[in-house]
Length: 84
Image 1 (cartoon, rainbow, N blue to C red):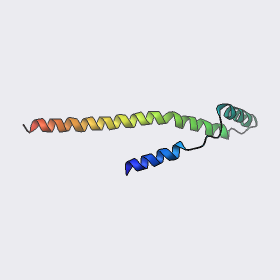
Image 2: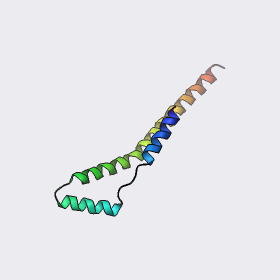
Image 3: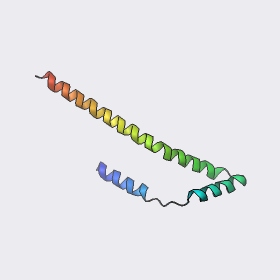
Image 4: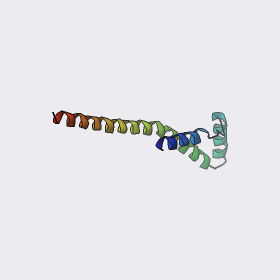
């Protein structure tokens, strides 16, 4: 069930249509900012921070799972040695 949820999530997030390229974003932000509307620039900056944080979050989750797995294996090994 968990695998199905992950696959569906990846398919939904990977199929998002890109609406603009870098040059288009820059010209739009410059025009809106010069006209006194900094709202779009704030949204773009928030999106950039979101994209920046995702790899770090993924590494932290993988590190935590690795830690829990090694801790569990270490406990199982010490319990097995204690019964002999």
